[in-house]
Image (cartoon, rainbow, N blue to C red; front, side, top):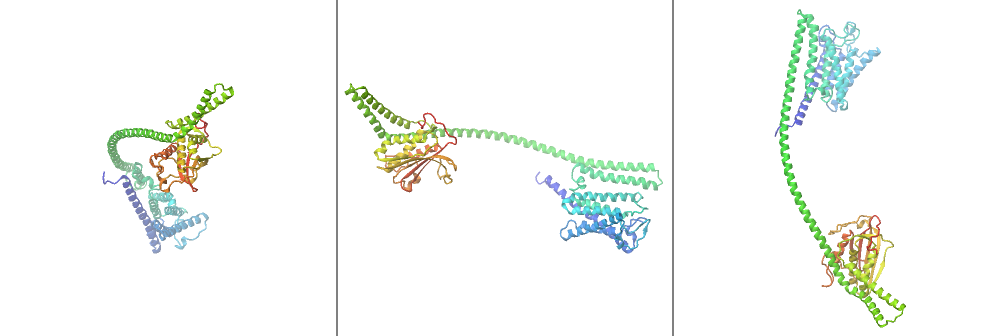
Length: 611
């Protein structure tokens, strides 16, 4: 309900109120004990002995005992302070315990330090003992009270304070019961008895220290809180103790001094005690029953609220599930569209790669025609020779047949290479020898090298592990790079093709702006490197950032599509590699192709680029 305080807030408020009440009880009881001690001191100083005892015939409280009670009262009052207040409380505790321990030492050793004589030099006798002397039981109680007060002031020892304080209250209660029954303890003997006023003051000090120990310590911990156990203890424990003491007092004092029938008095007392217990049980039942009824009512309300919340939650779950199902269907439809788009894009990329390859095939047509024309001329000459000289001997005939067969083989190699190069198959990754793939690309470009008078320099690494790649697609990349180098150098020049196996350096682990390839090498990763260097003029700096853009070309109109490098980079990306172009410091362009090497050596794949 809005505006209503929460249960934790109520418990906190109740706990704070109980703590304040306990502090007040502690101060009131300790100050009454201190007043009793001060009145006793005044009685001894003024000679009014009635101030030091409860009634005539009882032994009075000793002046040292009275001083100790006054000091304990001050100690309890200043216990919760800091600075000089805490110092005063500590001083009072130490003085009281020293006085009590000194008295116990006198009793055990028989050596009298005459501390009591400082207050009364010549005491009167009370039976076989002297007045104005502290009793041994009094000294024991002061030691217990001093320990309890010390534990109250030390947070780590506070849990022991209630134990010592309960012992003080229990011993004083036993002594008071003796006075209540008219048979004070140790009267008539040689051991100094405890005065009745001393027992009363000790009972008050014990209650004060129990309250000061707090609700978190025994015995108040068992009596505090809203639980049924604490409630029953608060009602029954004081009632049973008080009822027992009252019944015992009636049996031992009033019955003996009255003229009524003892059985009648005992029956009436028992009836009164039973009525009292019945009244308490009724009150407890009312309180506990009221709490149970309220708890049951709150439980019913909570269950109803929970039922409503469950119904609302089920409705929300049902609605949310329906919405989620709809969203899932929409997501599945979008994913299907994306998959179709991806497949279409992949087909378009392959078509683009093939189209660029056909463009390259067209540029290679003249060279291929020349390569095929020479073997055909040899075959034609052989046939003419066989026609005009039919009587050739076996040796000459074998020579002619050998030359014709070699020419056919050469033409078949050129045509097969061109067919393999121009095939439109999808990516077919196999374990290939990279040097073999490079040599096939160089053979395809041999006629252009010869026409342009370009010198090819090979610088291959001693051993390059087999790479997992599509040899036809990598040939397309290499032919495009070799063709670009030839066009850049014009007539004459040196073209260097080098391979190497190396690890990726730290400065190469980067992601270039605008790079959508998704390829990124790790530091110290092993790669195979192909470097194609030319001695041409290089790439102008102002167009360096555009060379991989689709349809960008520096060639004259009609001599290039502007897709060569774009397609080449895409092919390398599909191999999870990297293609880079840069101007060499000494002039010309260096094209670098990096291909990942497998972590485990590969076995040669049949019909791959290693043949």
